[in-house]
Length: 229
Image 1 (cartoon, helix red, strand yellow):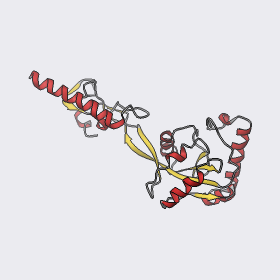
Image 2 (cartoon, rainbow, N blue to C red; image 1 turned 180 degrees about the horizontal axis):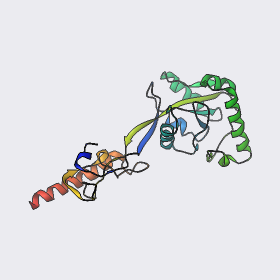
Image 3 (cartoon, rainbow, N blue to C red; image 1 turned 180 degrees about the vertical axis):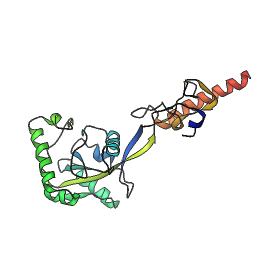
Image 4 (cartoon, helix red, strand yellow; image 1 turned 45 degrees about the vertical axis):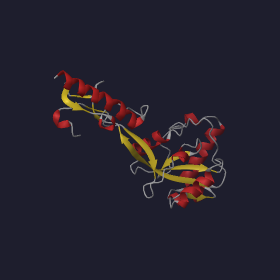
């Protein structure tokens, strides 16, 4: 961080806003992984997060919990938009795996078919018994559907970084605070250049809101100090 040499206090350096992306084509499958149906697995065919997560949370989980930063959203024909979504991404030269059986889907994913068959059975059995939330990790989808209707689809995605949340801590006047909790004279930060505005997710108005609001505050503060001098 450019402000570190002057003793600025840095906050939320480990936080970022994630968005799903397919690296090869930059396609954004956010509406697919937010379908409210299907399961999310890593490249070994193992679930690693709760499917109730938003696309932002799923992207962050993929980036932080899978060594390859790579996952598949597996869904079947119970989702009315599955076929059209697959055609859309295939038309963009974006890989979508389509199969008539779970075994065939597993082979296309490069996963042992026994793993996918076991995963489907575990999921479908838990759904039938109303025990999806007892899975590890739990699946908390509000209207889950079984995975048993061909064709089956696997949409690959990765966790991309839309914006970082970290940066130098500021006060209500957009002035940068040092490691001793005091204002660093003449140093201001706004928008994505400032830390402490975002935590865990976007704030209202997102980056432009933070830049506009604190930009005006910083300008007024600087003008008032200049006037007083």
